[in-house]
Length: 386
Image (tube, rainbow, N blue to C red; front, side):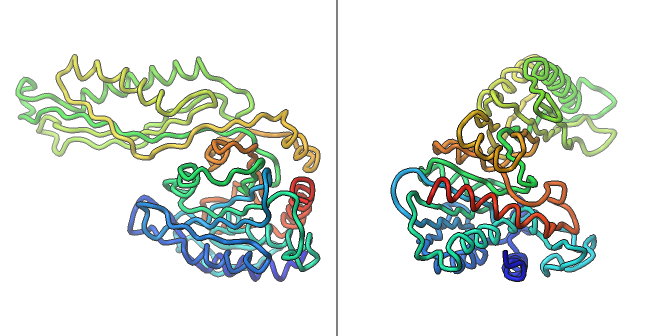
């Protein structure tokens, strides 16, 4: 593997800001990233399409395809990063910095570093001339938008029902350990509208904060029931979690609180469905509105990511376990895996780097992670596409 080439390519990717965030002041386009990747893979014989994502200005997916026919292997990664705090970095987040056998930069491990690994693997397979390599099944490279925020890129692929391949590898940083299970996530808001009044006489109003207290109590009861019903020892946290994230209400201690809003997230286990959970929440909380006379308004902060579970006994996962010498594992963080799985592909999450480095200052990928990743991808492409 040409380490110098890898460093040069990752430097180019890191230098392009591609933050995705719900806060529009922080959010940036990823177009320059997918254009750069298209410039890399087109000379290798890939037909590259850059597709704008409807209703998300400045957001694009890259779909690069080489080969024809049924089956094939998808190599997928997201092009965006989380926001950053420059003052906490020891170096410029957008200048890849090599130090102590590590490459530091925003997105270096999560997950821009996967794309140069793909390129290096293809170069190795083709002895520097992958363009003329004949495939028995297609290789499809996906570079998606907004994985760190809306997952709009992955959702767009599901809507267009493409790609239709047999297998998919999502190169999130797992230390090349195969991940076949992760929790889902939903983020919801509950707003209670009461009635303001002078605090000296509670009968003059309806205290929204007191109603919210009943809402929170019911959510805690619901959480206990879920944790009794769903347990999975493969996860470090073996039960669903419901976190009360933030709450805002009232404006003065001498006024009856007229409105209160709670934001929370719920991490779903495999077997739990997003829409079903939302309906259960409404069913649990609506009676509180009826008993108190307050309005309780539900809203979705984030469309949600389904839980993911891939059969570890499939031939694909068995092959990967043999190659990596690691058994399949489960993680608590969400990925694009359930969206690719919904397209009918056997899907695994596996890539170089450590998730422990993601979403924090001084993010890095270790140089020692790269060659093992190339070697494993080489064997998988050989088996399924050559």
